[in-house]
Length: 97
Image (cartoon, rainbow, N blue to C red; front, side, top):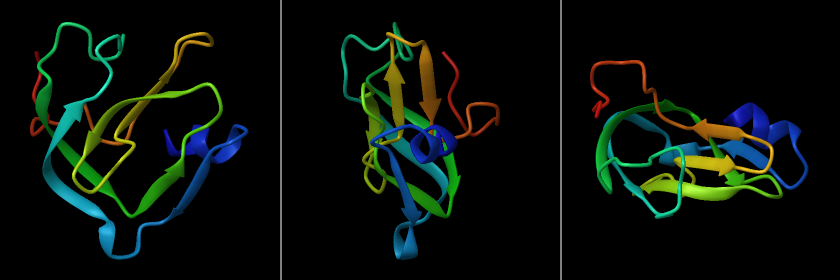
């Protein structure tokens, strides 16, 4: 996700300073039309581990989920089939549905 925000037009990644997130966090799905979180709960527990943060998502992307510390916890560009999450879906601390 950070690589897409860094490389694609309109996106911007910055150092997170004291807003870095490490550990279990609750995300909220913000887009009811999201394909990334289709048929999943609106709130989910995930594992975050990042020292940088996305300040702006790339052109054409929509925010799919947020957390208290991370306004862009997930994003998607359905036209180009680009999807990204700031958390780690592969670890056991992240809920699976």
